[in-house]
Length: 342
Image (tube, rainbow, N blue to C red; front, side, top):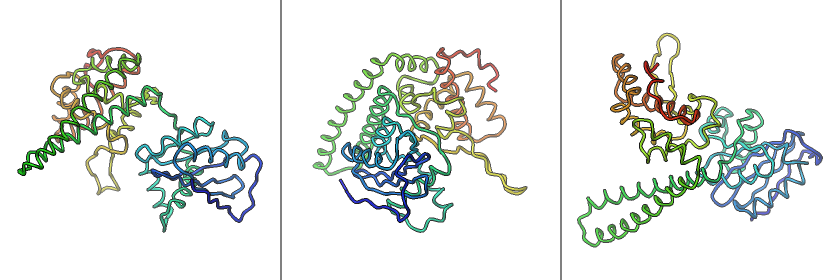
């Protein structure tokens, strides 16, 4: 673990510091930390991105803040590398926000940032945390966290399988073909293993099993799609409305108008969980054929002259609204509740 510590020239109040902010720039092996105190002073430190580093961080914080309960920590989502330190801080009483990198990138541009280093990024996150007070993050329940990890791992293996199968079709050299086939067999075995573990995870969690059964009552949503939707939607109770769930998936409309001359067609914002959007795509295509509620909705858009992909995007959003309603109410899909599909 790196031991270097930097202290600002300003004096530091070693008593309670309400309103302290902590910016953490996370990489695979290390975390750059910027602690902003309410007095205006700051301290910085680098730690390793592991349990020993987190324990060192806790001891370091004890010297500068009276309680982690007065601390608001901000960290960017970085492919899962941020999860351990975010969970550690949460479990030790800190308020934690996990930020969309696009949001912090836009903030950095607004601040006319002229340099980019790990330490500068940590400072930027602390400033963003202090100024914007972003919404708080809570770690997922262990069973939902396991479901998401298994689902994403399975999708990754399937993607690699498809890539190798395409490569095999293009390969003429026998030795290369044999090597690819050997790797493909191993991947297919691992896919079967993960699929069994995923099914077991669903069966051992009563509420996840119930939720999947509820989603399967919606025409167009099969078992595989229902599992993926649950894995990426996570704890749906944290959303106050179906619109919030759609915004989380990046399925809300993005309008672009300015003055009287700029009138661009609305499009999907795509600022959200791309995996959840992907999980909604094929179910929406199916629902446009076999779900009367989505069919009516799609037909109405078609009658207004909307393009095919616009209709598909709107169907994805509408279908996610239905999924949210079914899960939130805990009742199977009822077609009579969607007579006119408004």
